[in-house]
Length: 160
Image (cartoon, rainbow, N blue to C red; front, side, top):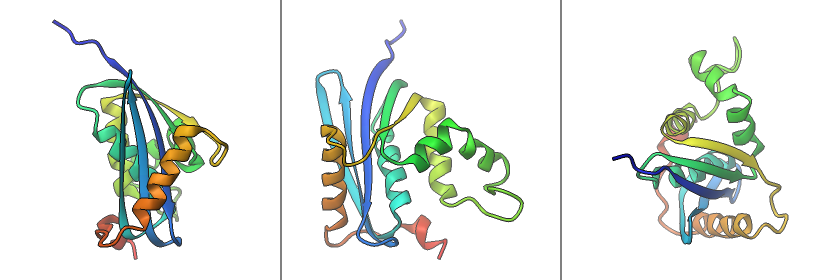
């Protein structure tokens, strides 16, 4: 007996109080009529890492293989996945070219793993353009970045 593949819509956003600085991420996961919000943060990280963490954390909430439309206002994420850059960096041992290392290989690896598990359509949306769920993600991310007692972003700390 096969189980029907769920169709999920996700909105994500990341925020940083500096770059680097305290950072947060937020996501809204929509499964039919069910809506879930998640957020988290780190005491020292970058905005790009928080954009990626939003997508990763949201996708990690999905238990079964799903068809996902993931909305992000991060061209970094959307372009790197849809244009094949991230897979090329991975194939080149996390190098963008012969001299330059790809940034955030730990998160790219995790995101690519999740892309193998789920069928994901990455959609770029303009940030701060009045899209309600994107605006909600921004508020979640900013609030998370301002929490006290945030954990360390070990992946970022290994790069500095």
